[in-house]
Length: 383
Image 1 (spheres, one colour):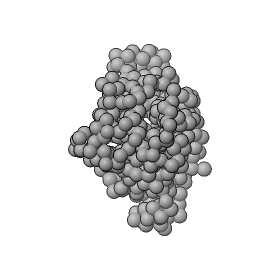
Image 2 (image 1 turned 90 degrees about the vertical axis):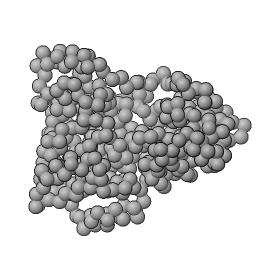
Image 3 (image 1 turned 120 degrees about the horizontal axis):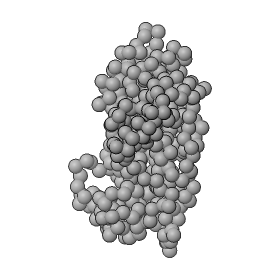
Image 4 (image 1 turned 180 degrees about the horizontal axis):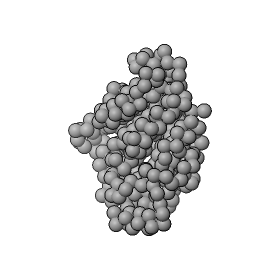
């Protein structure tokens, strides 16, 4: 049942999510909220590190940021000044609900969860179609792996078919969790593709700053890191072999992306694929969020692990090629699950997805995705 309004809310606060990929997946719900309340002033409360993600976004009028060390009462005081009459709390944490309560917002809607329902005026029941991310116990993983190994599984050489995509679980994807909350306010729950926006001026400024203006070859992106842990990272030697082959076949320019913590990884890749005939730009740790977005926008395709920039690129319209191992493309893949622009690849490892940070066995989920499959997928996308 959706919340009814005698008078449509004039000032709406949306408590945004704390991680880059999650934030991108909230954009369909925000667009539906704007569609439902076209005249409302919609403000988004967001971590400081994500503030610039929302620049030029048509769903919101204002981004209110908070620093990592900023306390609950300071945030509550900041929000009180906005005189909001409705709060939509997207995260499931108790803290996010308490922030809206401390702000004195009269109507506060969010998903029902223990330890926070008291702080909401409407606690929305979970969707019947929700699928939880269950971490597999290590003993279960070992049992599944042993059963597969006894049947003759060879992780380095199995399934080489390119272009695998997940079976469409139309109501399982995370974007539906956020749409479900917007629908409780009367918004349309129908899925939209996640969307972000970069202006032509921003793209041109990024080209100029990183000396890409004179490039005439195709520009491809490579993002080999992943913050969550090594289980999400396709092996670096496979990235190197893939980048070399694609460069030889397309004469492309590679842009290497990553955070400051990825510099050693991207430097290793840049050194391994360096060739006087080709151009490589290692940009890890050198870009602001808006610059990263602008550079992802100009790439013909992004080869990436399952991480925040994957979602950003897809939301900007850049095709992505992603090897999935410990995580599930059906639940948190880029874009909409049926987006034909992207190539989401998996192996046949029975323990995948496990949702663990580190593999407790032989990393067969990622080792089972061959260089040949990824190369073919990238070449399909760039056309």
